[in-house]
Image (cartoon, rainbow, N blue to C red):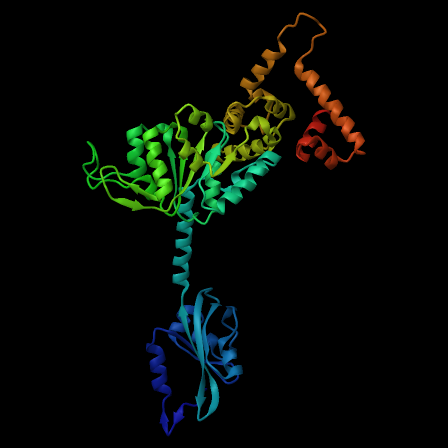
Length: 459
């Protein structure tokens, strides 16, 4: 034990009383790094009883990190706050240690441990809560953009670039192409991702209601106004992103107010004369031809150019059919989770039907058809087949039943398939059966080439 008799006085009892009373965990080692003293608070934090630690070396209670005692004994200097993980409790502590000097000689080291596990748990819970809040704010992630076609790859790259700058984005695409998904992706990859993503369907609200929803209103500004007024969606989206879907549907008067918001970076609530500064990223979307609407006087030209700083055109599904197998696989996984099913694949015949469809409803239509197909399936069935696509199969049969005036007349698809098959074979042989080079010459993706070669049995 450490000799604590100084000038004939025994400080051993006094020191032990102090150690018992303090709420901080304290451990003491001698000059050889062997534990000679710990207090009850130490046992509470580490989970090691007094009799188990006494006589054990300084590394005995450390799970992760370096021993502060050994640092002190080596350097003969105090060691500042250091984070350690101790065993067997597994708690995280911040510890500091200092040398024990008696009559100029190093007699050991004393360390004080502060349990921060509670603080760490609270921090982890806070981070988890923030993630959940962000998940509620925007329901899509960048990786939800499914597709490997050249057209969709180009859009993905443009989305990444758009996320890095605060410029206004105009998403253009047909209904069902997933404009909200792309808007969410821009927000999720931007520096604003920790703040709100607010979606507004401009087509779903009347002009007067849209204005009060966007900009808010003061108490008594109109009949039915809430007491105390209400903040608008632009204020809710402050420091974040606002997504104005179906932007072509707003009236000219609301367009003028929106233009002022984009130019001045401030809004004015309905019934107020006070300007409120805002910092909002605006992403607009439309399936209409805004340039045509401008020519017809239905959309302000200055607002059109303000929104079109960074235009992004989303291709329809019929122009990127090589992405259909990937999309189908993704939707199967989604509906397996939602419906509690275990569908593992889709047959080649069913996939061929999907590849031949025109997809006027785009990705949304494909998702609905896959969901409906799974509903049609028996619980013991694991593969989507053509029988599970009654609507598409029926339309295909109607085409096949068309009667032609001459026996020599054949279906257009047959001619197109034969021509495509022969041309692919020609280029494939010309490149000495180099698939990568063949795909480059045909200006299609390698995945699409593999699909076509399998379809036409080209080897």
